[in-house]
Image 1 (cartoon, rainbow, N blue to C red):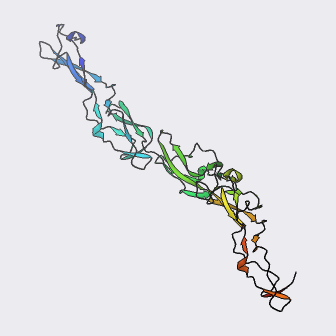
Image 2 (image 1 turned 135 degrees about the vertical axis):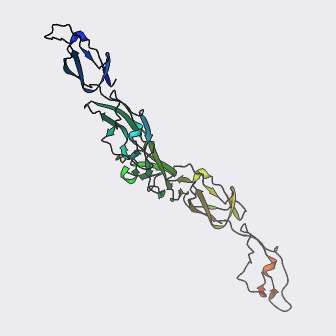
Image 3 (image 1 turned 180 degrees about the vertical axis):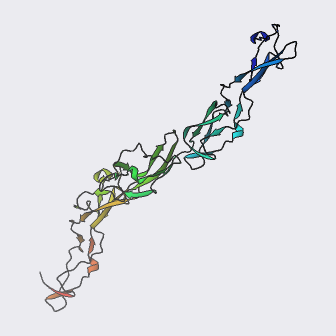
Length: 370
């Protein structure tokens, strides 16, 4: 209340008079009375039968020792401004109610200047009000600023590189400094990855993901791809060059090779089967015959090797001469004139060549009697 209840009675005041009369003091104040804060004067008077009047006065000072009661807004939470580490907050004195027993109209004040930039986390705001008696009351509420924005990571661009020499993998190394991280919290965040560098990356696409988490538990990530290419050709080892004779009575030799006669190694570590355009068993003609084997890995790299099979002909041609014959000397002569042609002799050879037989005898010839 803004008043104090006060009660006095006439018996609280003593009256003496020379007349010896018994006088009862009176006052204009009606008790019990509601006295306001501050000094309150009470006057009692008494009048004797001769009309003589006397009075006395005393003061009742009412003091206020009650603090004002302030009611602040409820605690609240809000997110940071977009891309910022803070939230813009505004409150007015009208958001705080003040009640005081003095019934004065009190205006609450705060040391926070609005609009205010509140950092991530709890931010306390205190309002106070003081009445004319110097009694001060206050209330406090909390604005919790939350960060719901994920960090933004920028990874290196996708790239490609070749396998290490003779290897099926490429050695790759990246550092956290190769990835940039920005966050509205303005924290210094270090990106991490589950890939241990330096790493051996296999042929094909290899994805690397970096992540970063701020103190509010927000996580961001970025991914980039390292494409490992294989540009090495398989290495084939063919059988050594060889030679062999034609099959009996034939112009060719029968030759057989298998893929297992050729070894293939490749940096990809794939199991490659060599192939050839030669169908085995093959009939190889007299002379050099080249055989080429090739193998192609999954990256399209092709290797080859070539070896030569030399087919030799060691069979003599077979000639069939005319049968033996006899004839008389030319008339009056001691000789006989004889004529034969190459066509009179047949020639066969395994080489299937057309062979023309020759002789040291010049036809027509004069043959002596024998």
